Image 1 (cartoon, helix red, strand yellow):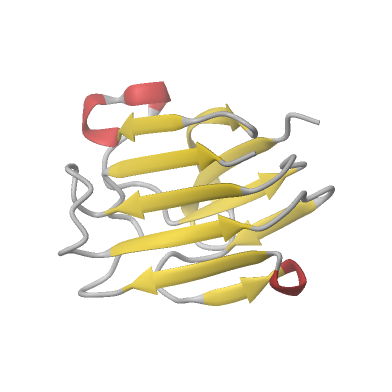
Image 2 (cartoon, rainbow, N blue to C red):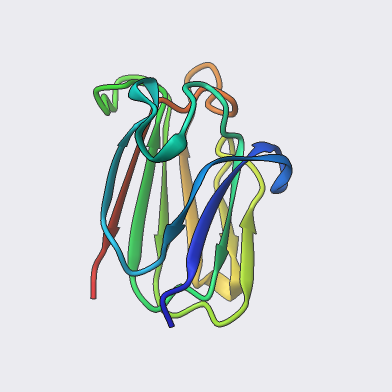
Length: 124
């Protein structure tokens, strides 16, 4: 089960997909300003996780250098996701899928639609 990770222009995984579909179970260091993996800078507002095989850490940043001094969010996937889970916004913290997906938002002035850097680490 490789799974897939998709980012979306609208909250709640709506509107247009932003960037290419990413494989679950893989590591990524995406610079949206440079167009890595088809991403545009300052577009993503939400993401959808489908069939993720195991523990994964996703971090999204307002800062292209992944500075934690500006807005950023951490999404921890604690175990396999056989179905689909939507992270509807990066601006607020949440426990999803019965606590299997934990979103922690470090809010300054808003992160939705301002994503410049995406880091994904598959931990298993």
